[in-house]
Amino acid sequence: LNRRLAEFGTTIFAEMSALAVSTGSINLGQGFPDTDGPEEVREAAVRALRDGRGNQYPPGPGIPELRTAIAAHQERRYGLTYDPDTEVLVTAGATEAIAAALLALLEPGDEVIALEPYYDSYAACIAMAGGTRVPVTLRPHEARGGAADGHSFRLDLDELRDAVTDRTRLLLINTPHNPTGTVLTREELTAIAALAVERDLLVVTDEVYEHLVFDEAEHIPLATLPGMRDRTVTIGSAGKSFSFTGWKVGWVTASPALVTAVRSAKQFLTYVASGPFQYAVAEALRLPEAYFAEFRADMRAKRDLLAGGLEQAGFKVFRPAGTYFITTDIRPLGESDGFAFCRALPERCGVVAIPNAVFYDHREQGAPFVRFAFCKRTTVLEEAASRLKTPT
Ligand code: PMP
Ligand code: GLN
Image: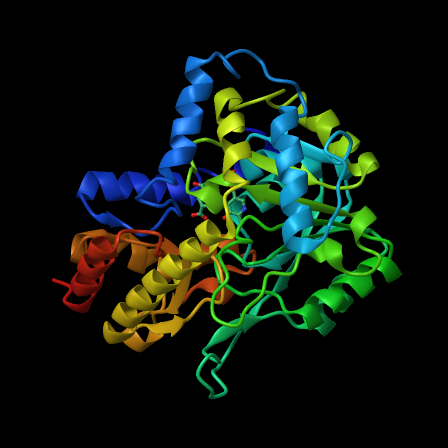
């Protein structure tokens, strides 16, 4: 393994999902739903397979039907208009979109500012592209009172501004944010946009949890802010929006110049992927608003169920405004090392979780935090909550 990748080892998701299988534990680690997405979308995939659509290489940028559906989705929901032919690119999941964007846009030595804790592929892809990551840490805030105003992780805009240097090329943003569940506010996004314009930075924004926002939180695409449309690469995923994480269909929307750049890298990574599934996802993106509303309501109820269970079990809970993850603080349990805690948890009570420290450069900052995924059936969440309450 070369020096660029040596520090990354095996991704925590593989390690923890294997541990869940070998110990027969409930897997609240890796973020994947335990119920599949809509029946009619699965049927659309079957039809595509049967009718011979997508069984051979689809067009490199993605099938036109899907690119059109992605553009229509961005327009309908956010008023963002993209030309399906020149401003939309289908990728092998958001993971490939992130990799291709970073490989295409970074010169060796360029600095990339990423919100820490960050989804683990960011660090590895920045390294593969020869860039240097500059983490800006989201800090835990205590609840200030008020019903929806729970504990949360917040971005310090001064820290963000101070992190920009002459070598900064790109801001890598993620909202709703994995693992903290933070949804950036309009005020925060406006400040990020102003900084990007002032310092002439590119922005890659991972918005795979765009449909998973709860209560009063609103997902605002960074590309909608002034000056941002043509400097922003926006990333979405059918895995997250339609509960088909195994299909690996993701996408990029951006200006023609940026899409061309990302496609240049993408064509040598996978060229194309997920043929028949692209047809099905085109149909999924046209689902009525009721689908998205129900998906949100369902996940919100699951969030509340698991958050309540974790609180009763003694964790401090950062109730997420978005995503399907809950970050907790284990210090009220008399614990302080999330790694040790997560490695012991399957034996102690048959539940698997993820130590947030893996998402930090400053590992000590993440040490007491542990992430639980709540995209699971109610009965599974109830069983997990009950096991967590009475560890053996
Ligand atoms: N970005 C974030 C923030 C994620 O949490 C994930 C996966 N859960 C991805 C990207 C990757 O998405 P995909 O499965 O579409 O590759
Ligand atoms: N993104 C998912 C998570 O954060 C898992 C993706 C993966 O396994 N790489 O849990």
